[in-house]
Image (tube, rainbow, N blue to C red):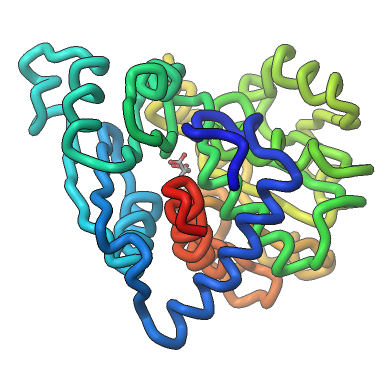
Length: 305
Ligand code: NCD
């Protein structure tokens, strides 16, 4: 049983709920690789509202829903929905809730997930709201770390290269701050330094944090978590063009160290493709774990697991 009805922020996740979701995800992974599907959500309809581009999150939610035999209804861009006609988010959610048993939404506006959850009469899942949060990515990432390293505590984790604007970094750091003796290092161009309010909220939860522009210093770590510069969130596109190739992980940099490499993807400039052949490049395994973890989340939020 999860301690929340809606999942808006990774701050709602507790150690107990994570343990439960990982246990169910293991079972779901087994079902997916043996029988392919299970009928536990065959009487349910899942609404997927994606008002911002998505590949992995959208496809893994669809795959998870199919493996649970749930029905899916789907709206993709704000151009093909009544947003184009000026409809409010609140009205859109009210109506979608009357058509479905759970709503999954991605939206470009930070804070939109909370607005939607406050209105929704059915369970609501935030699939990314602007530069704010991406809690289901954090679930996927944490599950991957547990699978790759066997622990979630006593870790050094380096986050780059856009800790200011990456919602995946924000959500994962919040989840990992639940566990003992973790140390965070944020790296990237000075203009993309994490906000002071974000750093102090981590420090308030007992996490020690360092910020450095020197990638070399940041490579003394157990986990290198990289995410592309968030092009669509730059107020000044010229700054994006100037910074986009300033930081990039090459095979030579990774070869002499023993960190695992994670990336929520899409990969743009932050990791050279030659890194893919290293056994510690775990980002495609990470993308695959998105299906069992989202199966576990859907089944648990609909109280079938
Ligand atoms: C991330 C996102 O949408 O924030 N992608 C994802 O969901 N796997 C990362 C990104 O777009 O850079």
